[in-house]
Amino acid sequence: MDDAYEYGQIAAANSLSDVWAMGGEARLCMNILMFPEHLPFETVQAILRGGYDKVAEAEAIVVGGHTIKDDIPKYGLCVSGVVHPDRILRNNSIQKGDVLILTKPLGTGVLTNADRGGLLSDSEHKAMVDCMAALNKYAADAVRNLDGVHACTDVTGFSLLGHSYEMCGESGLTVIIDSSRVPLLPGADSYASMGLVPAVAYQNMNHLKDKVALPKDLPSHVHDLLFDPQTSGGLLYSVASQEAGRIMEALLKACQSPAVIGHVDGPSAHPVMVI
Image 1 (cartoon, rainbow, N blue to C red):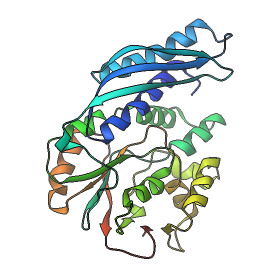
Image 2 (image 1 turned 45 degrees about the vertical axis):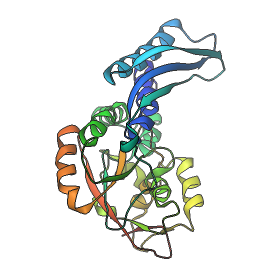
Image 3 (image 1 turned 90 degrees about the horizontal axis):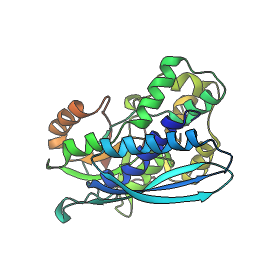
């Protein structure tokens, strides 16, 4: 991001997500900031203000931090949270018959590539930034006390398919993703069709080539977006089918565009299958 304040917001939102992905609540945060000495003070201040404002929105507290001299600016948070032992969500406790729900649309990797080339419209840029800066707190709060939530992960750099594979763990079960139901950010399909795909997406493809079954007629841009590395992506929930309606109802009140994108089935030749 070129805007320092937006950069701070997105980095903080991304850092906080791991606590919410485990069903917890963020409490204490420490800034970790690396920057070159020639970076203007106002830029450093804007990064930290962006992070501070997101931590405040998360109802957590910044209690200090560390600064390090480095040639490339880097910022994030070390986050501590709390969770009741009986409500801890793991990323590999899916169950056969579960419904998969994603709380944010995909496409941030492709769109940031397009943004570097100055191709995004103002509305596409705003939608991208708003999505990355949006806290997963609201989704986590909405389902925290609901029955039937079996597993959760946040979708970040390993892509939707990479994190879906993580959810399989050693369960022997199969995650089935319906590509037609996966929500996308405005413009993501168009820019993916133009080939504006991040290098990390190809790393994800290579890592998962023996683990994911893909239909031969899957459009290339959809294929690429399923491997697209996300920054501050949404939460991916695996929930009991009989509770899915109630959980979706709660998420629709808390998030902009949650969507049922698949289900969990029995063993197959590949842990993840796209249809």
